[in-house]
Image 1: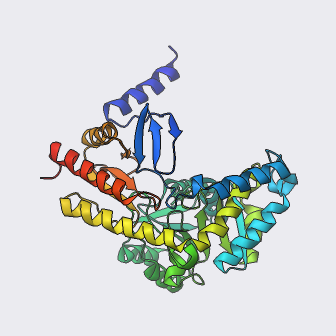
Image 2: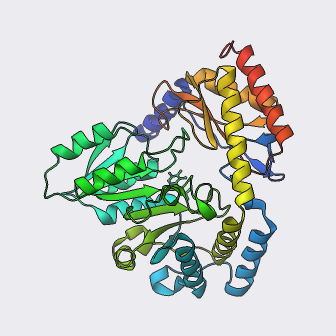
Image 3: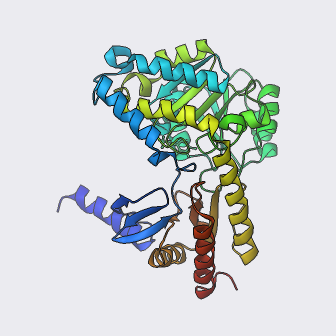
Length: 393
Ligand SMILES: *Cc1c(COP(=O)(O)O)cnc(C)c1O
């Protein structure tokens, strides 16, 4: 065996030992609520398809229509010949929905964060990032070569202390998730706006888990709180509650022009397939009208959180449709997830390094399209496993 082979294989073994080795599972889609995994029919409590739009006939039809009209591929990057007129239509509708001057669509949330952060700041600048921010934000900061200052989760005092120490002349970017993806809690957006104004920083907010879910017409958490004019760089994705794929930024036209010119993950990649743009367009229409689905999701979330914490589970600081059950040890968490599967529930274990050491958890996420009966059934099963494993009494 060559040296490099041996080294990489040892790393895999090392992960195995720490119960951190990840594996792919083949999934079949059954309907909005159920999947087939490893031959078992499972209630899906792991999906980000919060409003159940991924299987919506209107999105599917719009995808097919766009494919028929434009073909299976966009054939080039947007700055070459991939910028089909469909982009302009969808971006105009997106800007109108969000009440902004302009909107720009990207291939994914991951590449959006990589590209935006590395376009906004560089070697001599500073980025202040919540410790629990999504990995794509971290990676964007690393790529930018700016100095990363991680502040304690949602801790405005810590953030201010770091801002105070920063040289005045340096460009400063504060970046946060609006709803945190592994904890389902919410960023202190008002306080962040105050600090960014006090210290002359740029504020970037990632609404991946709040777009479609919060605010009037599903505009997101920032709109819900009325801070849309204060957030400088407003990012979100179509891959979660909108049931499609891709990401966007909304804001001033000049800033989006800047991204078109400076954002490498926008410039050097093939544009989204027309099918995706078609389903995004349908989703933008639907999500604005579906306040009943949003209401249902919030009701379920509150119910689920109340029940689980009432049973004695540690659900952390969740305030949304993302509800962690924090167990701590990797082994116990993996066992919990396996038992859930045996009883017909898909809920994956999330382990370090995705979450801090010693906080391995099951991450439940809810969908508006579940039935109340199924939800109650799931709560009973979760409780039974929790008791068997002595995680709750
Ligand atoms: C899921 C997620 C992303 C990545 O979005 P994709 O479209 O899946 O690449 C970015 N930011 C946050 C906060 C996320 O939860």
